[in-house]
Image (cartoon, rainbow, N blue to C red; front, side, top):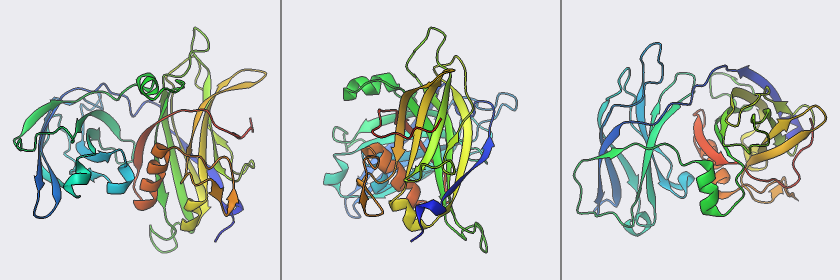
Length: 331
């Protein structure tokens, strides 16, 4: 097993502009069915209509549909349709399938979302909807139209969960195993972290906050592990589009390492902590030692597990910012 000190961080690039912010609009048509014989949940995705245009200059949207079964996204995994290029009214006629017992299915929620596919992985959210499968009428296996909705705001989620509102971070992560891109390429495993934006940050001043994001791969808190974004001034919904690559990973390190992302308000004399997330397995241990920072929430654990189980693929997520015990203090 590699020592965590072998993991190093390097900034890959900083993207300018907002690649992930379009207003949700349009409709999606699909049907649900359960095949008792094969114990298979089937989602027949027919088409979408009047989706948002992502690239205004080119008038282009390349949409695909993605599904999860909630609350445990990692357990059943995601399903995706093909990508339809240059259309806001794509036709799919594809079936997405889950092998799952009916009694287990009935305690799930179906999350169906539509995304614009970007060749560099900077996919844009176009809208979503959810169905509580416990109350679904399984006699209804006909095609129905559903309106696509925006993501639920962080403030609303915080109110539901009874926690302090600190905002939400939209990001993608990817694990690239050693040698997976060709002969000895990359020479060691890499974790890619794309910090897209944050929403609904605490309003510390009437003009907003001057925010930036810090990143570490714990347990390493050295300057070698430390990376940060540029400062976005006077904005409670800052767009960073900043990608960081940490190399030196062995696959087994993913069980013991934890990516800590924190957002701060910048001032001349000091920086004020606004909130953060920790991506890891949340076991309370790292390399056999009890640590307070291995405390990932259920959503953070599921996000990390999905990255581990689907190498070389960008995993998209929106995670609530929270208070963190023992957060790293480099400036």
